[in-house]
Length: 200
Image 1 (cartoon, helix red, strand yellow):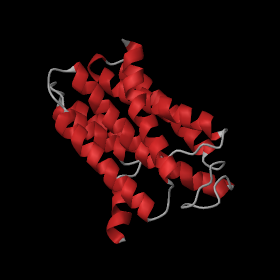
Image 2 (spheres, rainbow, N blue to C red):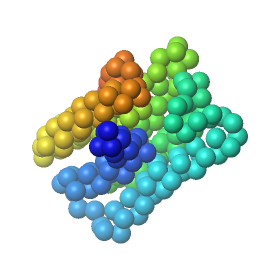
Image 3 (cartoon, one colour):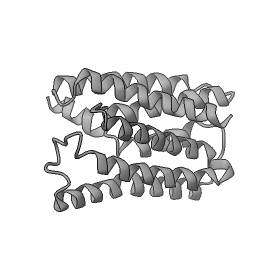
Image 4 (cartoon, rainbow, N blue to C red):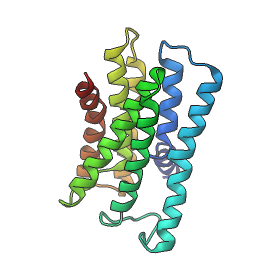
């Protein structure tokens, strides 16, 4: 049980952006200055980890959220909308820098996925944000695999396996339903692929 909880925490949606960017820097055939890498990692960590935590505390104090653990579909709308704009601004900032356009694609894709999740929430469709994040990571490296001559197959396999472990953990803990997991993963997976195709 502790291991399953550990997996769900380590692979949390607010942790994964930093992990994906770190994997990106170590895997792409482009040399980035150390100062640039550290600056970007710090920026991503602050905006996708620390800021969401602050927003959650703020929303809890304002009564938007009734719990830190069990968040209803209706309660999740404002946090999702907030992070949608954060990811959009990150995508816009990175996409204007020539050697960071891949990261711009990553964050624009994340914003697109959250936009879709926000829209379908009004149809009472709930997607697992954990699996959305895993799907985005997988789809992002699939996109890079088709863009660069270097193979990213190893990372793609790792993220697919981690998605399976995470999905199994969430199902065992009964914190999410199978439909939420499938919907979340495929929304995340398709977002980078569709967004990159749109840009081409």
